[in-house]
Image 1: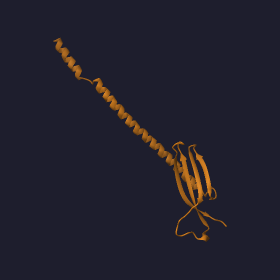
Image 2: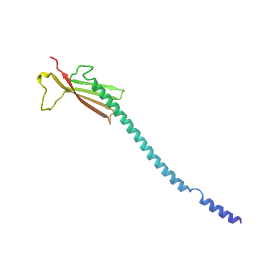
Image 3: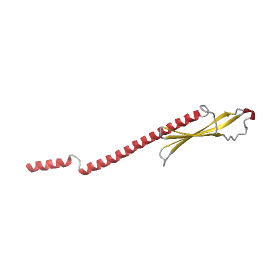
Image 4: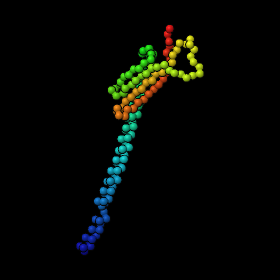
Length: 142
């Protein structure tokens, strides 16, 4: 009877639990799955950071556009500056070349000026930039 008990307990022990190979395969699948999930989350964080940078660049460019012709006289030229140590901006103001069928009357004494603001940021090997352009009218005083 002792032999039959041994055989029964041996067959029972063989059927319960997982083999080493099954455990290794399960851990391998888990490791691959986790690495894919982590890559997805990290790329999502990178995209969110990039979107934040673009939003900040638009705010800087919009602010610079609003200043032109308000804080100083609207004159042809170029101005540069930096914000937060990583965003560099350039404001260019020049007479607009309007290709329209109707031109402004000479008596109007108005000159359309084009304002172009470029904001640059990022690493020097892969810089990112954003450009906003608008027109403002300059009153020519006699």
